[in-house]
Length: 155
Image (cartoon, rainbow, N blue to C red):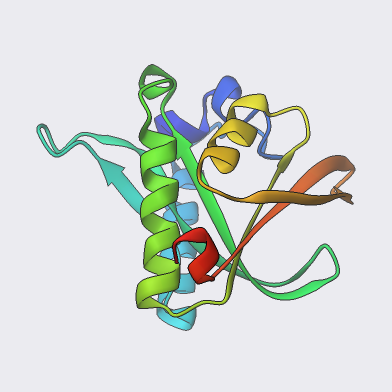
């Protein structure tokens, strides 16, 4: 986790500053675990089946209010740079959309990204999320995407 979040290229569009000390990574892990205990949802570690190597994280995160919308389940993912371009983001996003709709019975899943994050926009588009609007978050312009649980989109 420290390797992932200390890489400036990895966190470039995330609104985070690169981590500088391993204790910061430990705190992030504790925060995710607490969110999972409190809300029953959170980001999961992504590992390669063949080697059990940690390659990043992905999952849904509950956000009470964002972009003038209430009760959001935010789709997110982050991978080590050496694993970019291998389809893991798309694979993870599709898996968590299925999980959100089929297991959690959510009606809507959202995602928001820096408007300049072209690679992430491609992933969201491939997974059926639609750009609905842009908004300012922490001083940066973000794009808001959504997908609705509907038989029309295969869910």
